[in-house]
Length: 162
Image (cartoon, rainbow, N blue to C red):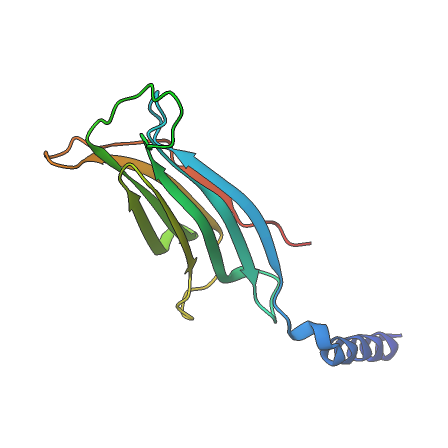
């Protein structure tokens, strides 16, 4: 009985190697959002996370593509501006983790504007197994020294694989 199982496993493995789609990497898309945590929502970011999976392994780690925008208010286009310009700018920070180690990070800033971005976390081939991305929006003064403040850090976990 064992030789039959071994033969069946060998045939299944060869069939998997022969499939043309086996060499393509898979992707999973998630939406993300975070804000500065203040009453006026002066700073905010939103967009999409595209989790890329390796062609050989179904585990995360091939990189995470991010596209979106960071917004700092007030904007001229805001209807009925209820919050005045406070002299601060907003920075959205995106950090990729593998376990407890931060393996990559990018930041984008805006001052009374909307700034769009598109980038990839984990482009270094030595970086593997990104299991979460943390997004946080902080605000800092334009002219004076801090104090700065930050909204709640939002964690996005890599999607489970089947």
